[in-house]
Picture 1 (cartoon, helix red, strand yellow):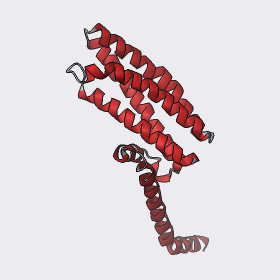
Picture 2 (tube, rainbow, N blue to C red):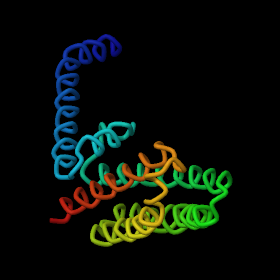
Picture 3 (spheres, rainbow, N blue to C red):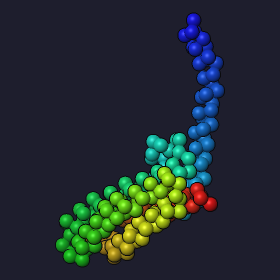
Length: 183
């Protein structure tokens, strides 16, 4: 008898639960679009956020955290790519730049600044989180500046140049989203 009642309740309430879930998904999509459209490159921001399985239930802090996670993933990718370029080039200056940048992306950016940003987001220290993203971006800009002449030449793959550009775009998006949290 209890099973029948539970089954009937589920059947009666299921349509409303389904509708509420759809409304929640629409609301989350709206939040993602609104926050990402505050950045200069909303398409890159949304591509990053929607790539996460956590995007469906993310609030503003969750969206910022997802973007910082994308930055961490990019930093890891750049470590591998720059290490590959350093090991295959005969240009000593390029080799040194790539080795130094790979170290920065690995340790300072990936294991310090971006981890601090995530922790600060969790602890509601949004100003500190943004500062950590900016600190990582400063190192990224130094690497990009040193590598710029090589990026424009045939010594660099378009893939590495693409990841460097996307890192710029997502850093700016992360800062804009974090600013919206504490403004």
